Image (cartoon, rainbow, N blue to C red; front, side, top):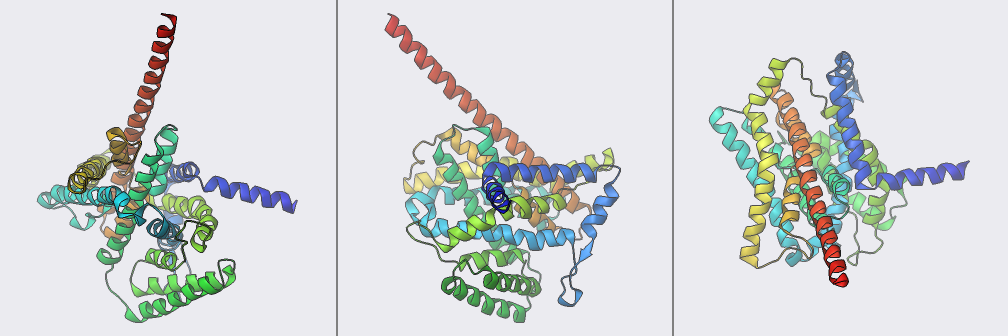
Length: 411
């Protein structure tokens, strides 16, 4: 029985490491939250999200919604940080010539949406504090849509999108740390730095198998970063950056930790966060109409749906002109457009930034969450249509070629 349980656990873990499974769970959690928040039992959903738990003496008596955003998402950012470091040390970002286009695409895909949001909100007196909401790309959701939409998409498109999203995540982390930190408590921050150095020493000396040593130190670093005023998810990235990576891309501590924690991130952390973040109530038609007219909603939707692809395509074109770099082998303009649309799926990180930007801001926060859900859905559908139409065209071309070949043989 123990062996069967162990095999079942390993099988579940392998499934959760796939982009498709993570994206499906994320979407299911968001749909469940949205349905519950708009059902006759909406009050129970709000009570659950507002339920407080944790030691008040350590300032950790947080609501379940806050635990999901501050605590569980630290696991997501830890896994993303491990992936970031591996990309910089042994992946696409190691070679500047190969990295220049996806890096430029990421920068353009963050700059243009922010400018669109400001352009929409500044004249209308909207909340400019939300400028960063449409800059983020959801790695898990975007890759899941790519995997589901087209099995024949070139491998170079997935690599390009992954690199773009990784750089996007890194810049989003910097934005969260700089733009959404109200004040700093230096003593907890210094203590976190000391423990972070201790974690780095332990992971090099004791290895990743000594989780009983590493986990308490990691939790302590998270708690101190939270107490310092910096958003606690940044602790996940800082911890990940201390983990050694093999330059040859072989077995290393970062790979082992990513393999171990990715199922927790994809199967628990991100879906639970989505469940508490996506419960937007549409109580009354007037409320919906007001939300859709709000410059905050318009700026976020326009930024994600239009700004992302415009930024990705524009920055890539400019980088190619300035550097002479070409698109990766196997990628075409249609694939680049698909990458731009997929990067408009903001979801997880966009929802987090919206919570930070509009905390206590009344309806603006609800409108921002609605805009993220709407824009991410539009971007996902548009990308799916583009990818499937490309696959259909390719299939038709292959069939036509075969038909011509048979006709030639018959002649």
